[in-house]
Every structure is written in structure tokens, then in C-alpha cells.
Length: 130
Image (cartoon, rainbow, N blue to C red; front, side):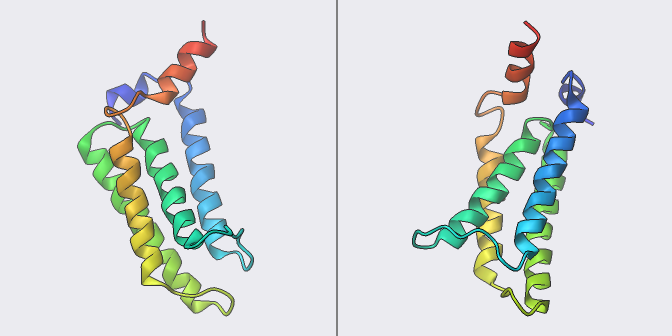
């Protein structure tokens, strides 16, 4: 684990929150009636947003390039796997475009995370512990 991640006072809580986000994405990907966005390409926007949030969240805790590569690969593989699972069911569809949207979200989350932006978790901890 990267030393900066260890410096977070509530690392376990932040990790638990991150894994809850992952579980939510899995649930929303496999549920028969996912929420709809009533805008053109709303489905793809939802995919990009979900995977952006996942990757961005974990960039708050893991700054080392190797860690981020592994996390990004894990999320890309998650998105691909979930699409194949959707294709196996009777109520959802397999779409390569969703895989592309998921991957775009992972890349967006990586690029928008620290060090390009402030580490939100450190800031939250600093504000709460004042």
C-alpha cells in the first residue's frame, strides 16, 4: 500500500465506502430495472459517470502508478465482465459501447484525481479533525 494512503486517518472507512460504490455499480449493472436518465445517450453518460466516480474515489487513496494501473485494469475488467453477464440474462443487453463508456470513465477518473486535483479525503479529514 502506498505510504500516502496509510497517512489517511480513516483509511478503512474510505476503503469501505469505495467498496460500497463498487457494489452499487455491480447492482445497478445487473438489476432488471436500472434508473434511466431521460437525456440523449443517458445510458452511456451513466456508465461514464459511474466508472469516473469509482476510479476517482480510489485515486484519493492510491497515488503510486503501479497501484493505479492495477485499479484501473480491475475496473475495466469489471465493466467488461458485467457486460458479458448482462448478455447472459434475459432482461439486459450486451453492448460494446457500454464497455467503451466504462473505460472512458476509468480514464476520466484517473486523470481527474490527485495530483491534478486536491485530495478530497485528506481535506475532509483535516476539516473534521480541526
